[in-house]
Image (cartoon, rainbow, N blue to C red; front, side):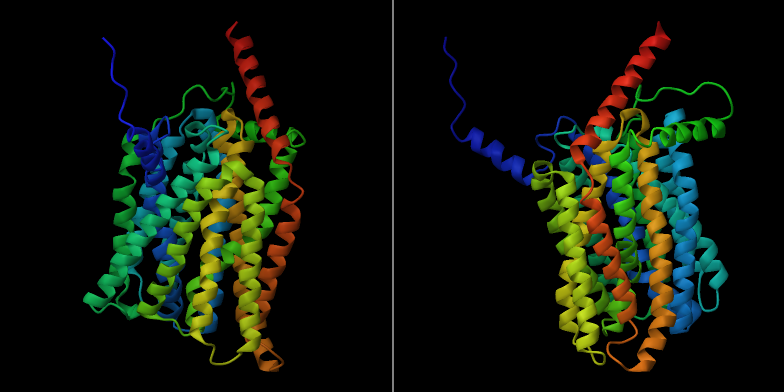
Length: 472
């Protein structure tokens, strides 16, 4: 008996589902979803604490002085990132050696969520308490982001690396939109617009992180068999031997190191813009609930960009995608620079709202593109280590970029504004950021993506042969 053919509508329906449901054509949709939930979870720290609430709260409530607040905020943020720089490659190498990426991922999340709740204990004059809570919280957040990224090469293939990375990034920004909606609703309904009443938001941010990372804890599995153990010595010694091995083979991974240098320089600007986005918005007169709405607009743009990036990144390549978003960042920064010159006083808010879309596009694309690039360049045996180097680069950029921007804005900016030549106190700092983006763009153009992928695959083949030799 002949069987009937599927109805003609079946194929188009599958195509429609594939377009609107990003996991539908993946071989491991449940694992990718659980992995992306960590991106959604940690948005409560990067968005509510770093970008939106804690910077202005620290400057105006904890410190109570504009200039000193800018300076201290940049010092505290830079200190936390500098300590992350030291910890990232070492812990990454240990996680590869011990195959404990998942344990470190979840541990970082738990520490960050607890300390974030603790920020609610801060208030007027509690500078030291704020520093002692925020610094380790930011370290844990950044380490967690590194370990989360290190799962990418084991969840994706070379053909869909960019797509999987962008799915996770998109989930993060969807989480950001939910957080912004809840925050704005609470501010309006419970009259929490004034910074003095923001402590409950810090508790909420910590609880959001802890609850939404549960799918990662329950579903993600520690990758097995992707690492060749290092024999003998202590655990720390094994980690340093792995790092020494990578350093000795720096010429073998030349494209990776070229990219990391380019990413470092451009991230000076990205990190400074993230840490001071709320502060800059307030300089344009956007405050309280208006600030939340502004960040919401920026996040919507970032979500659309991340979703769009998932559709074209694997086709044009990670390097081309990074170049595109570097240009977007440069144009946005130059636009802000121009605004400070055209309107040194009484800046029109609508201009900053328009430029905010450029910042959102840059945020939505540069992270997923850089993560995909490192994923393509990472041998399976060294994913945590290489993403630890990626995290080291990004956090080092934050330590330098945030500190440089904050100090230039606070001190050089005040001197510049006093000269009354052109622009305002933000003009010198924005000129510095534009220089970072120009240099980063020129450096990334030197990266050969194809050669970097080949180097990673050769390392995989060498590791396989080594394990075979040891087994025999």
